[in-house]
Amino acid sequence: MALHRLTSISVGVPNVAATAEYYRDFGLTPVGETSDGGRRFATREGGEQLLITYAPRRRLLSMGVGARDRDDLDRVRASLAGLDIPHIGDGDRLTVSDPHSRLEVTVEVAPPVVEEPVAVAPTNGPGRADRPNGRAPAVERETRVLPRKLGHLVIGSVDQEATQRFFVDGLGFKISDEMKGQAAFLRCSEDHHNVLVQRAPLNFLHHTAWEVDDVDEVGRGASAMLADHPERHIWGLGRHHIGSNFFWYLRDPAGNFSEYYSDLDCIVDDALWQPAAIEGARALYNWGPPVPPSFLAPDDLAELMTGSHAPDSGG
Ligand SMILES: [Fe+2]
Image: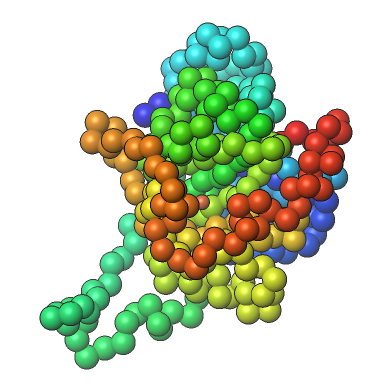
């Protein structure tokens, strides 16, 4: 695949200090500040992947996509030209704005994420004791949960189909699964989805998702986040049907959701994956607590819509 990863995102929030504190607690590593007070964060294996910076209302300011080489960028340039979408930049980097969601995307030549394979501990099951005479290693863990990488982000778009075309026909993302006319799970790597575009009454950031080692890390990470801040809880623990991942969603002080996830489907051979149109409850999850209404429609949507025609908004 010409594209191979998400690189980084910039999220604008009105409360930079409080939101930055949240992502430090979440397990991202602070790596410095920008000249205008933005806070930069890295993951264990994805490098610098998050910038929290000031904006009057929360919004996704920009996202980055990694490409393998300049030839891949030239293919993206040709595709964008075919759609009459202007872009800037040459050589190893180009920046383009989706005319529909107004999201700014930078595609750049970037090294791949190299993930150290997670060790799989033996488990017991009915009729087999593959871990005899011992406690599960997972219950002995005491280290902080530190996400490996930024895995995906979910955006609402006022024109879902047009934004989907921008990512697929313009940038070269592939469709993994769809909820026809409602949402599309798109990938630019071997992960089942890196961007999910959903129909929404305004353009906004629904959530970012950060990969951890396994379901125990999903649970341990969320439990640590909630110990002193129960108000951060949104939805979890559960397992999605689309993508298969375990999930637990939390809310940052600006209103963005962040997800710990593990065991996402991987598509290493495009020919062996059949995209499906999924409908009904399974579109949301396979098992878990009931979906809270605030997950489907975040509590601040009306407030965000009120400002959605202001010059500073639109992401
Ligand atoms: Fe997610």
